[in-house]
Image (cartoon, rainbow, N blue to C red):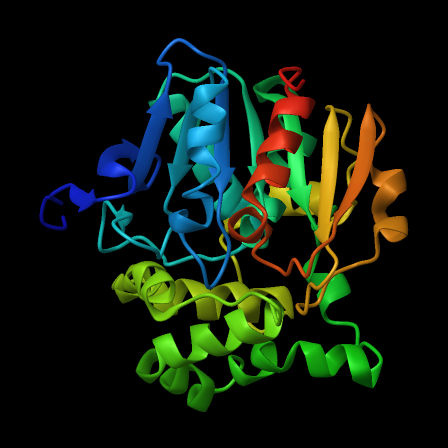
Length: 311
């Protein structure tokens, strides 16, 4: 068993708390009314909970109980057992959210995210709609399958995914391990070309990549997607359901920044995947991939609107 984890102080978030949930000890921040409706906000790669540092107070002021966890492989989140496979496949990450909600005794929540977090939020909404009051998903419907991931894309699209193929090599794994911060900063710059973040903002999030499982989770995530790494048998049935592209019936708002430099689908390509109340919003003003940090009010408004608490 790993050593006990001391809560990590954060001047912006107060204290990062820890709770055992599923196979993890999850580090998370919480704000707002303990008896309010819940909102679970999920970050992506290579980002962390600070993507929501300006969203949380807006939702808390509106009466929400806001939960922002570090994903597996980030920040103070740790595996409870050294023997657990460091799995980055989509079903495992989504089940982490369900396990966290169970541990915190949250029956239902608005689930919202971007990048990896949007995919997990989409999966929760698709497979466990009874746990989901609403969905906010940046870049829309991101549920995928390994079989689809094996298919080649046109050259221009493949170029956007260069890091996925880098990670498929031993050189890529070693390079990412050695240059985590340099790699993450490059992704931030290319995915959000008009976002003028400063060094302090970057370093605040970059500390979360020092997690001892970070490289293993990231590498497995991208290798699994293109069929170069196996998942675990316990997730096979879920992955089969996800590979069928299940529709999402819960109230949903999808968001996209007008300057997103990361690979992402066009809104028209996924609109039909949402069978319930649905709308899409393109956020203008040079907003890139890390939408909640670049446009926190727009992200918070979407959560409030989908949860029925908007103006």
